[in-house]
Image 1 (spheres, helix red, strand yellow):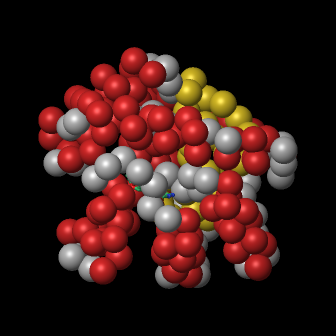
Image 2: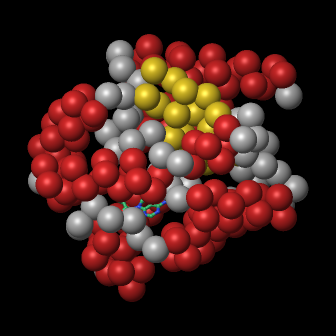
Length: 194
Ligand code: AMP
């Protein structure tokens, strides 16, 4: 299986690139943010709970997020592999994912981290907020909190994969196609060496 964690701060381009990668490598795209938003739209209990955190730019609690993610993986027993987008966002989530995948005799192949400077992130998020319909992209205070949460709780997840020699930084500025080519190069290199 090819299991990629697509990593990076909010606005780094994970969602855009994930869609292209799943098509090229025939993978299943699991975006925890998208799944939460679908639950909010469907007015489920999970959506209601998630919304109270998302509206402030805070993380949804680990246990809720981990259970949801595991259920989504289980819905795709025939998958060639997964692109995890926006997950794991904390070390406990990364540990839970490792344990869960190893119970299925698979593992994370690689974490690819999109690297984009702060000013560019804020610019992109505000631009996206104009038509994404996402409340958390419209307010500069919420955007600032999301970046703060990323730096304080999520950035450290890179160390978890670096310790396993699975971490690779990819420069996330340029055209969508340029960035996609950089990601594909890193993945192809990995496929050859496996
Ligand atoms: P995203 O679409 O990845 O930007 O996520 C939007 C929001 O969903 C985040 O700001 C969090 O509130 C919540 N969220 C998404 N993924 C996770 C996760 N792995 N852990 C906790 N909260 C998450």
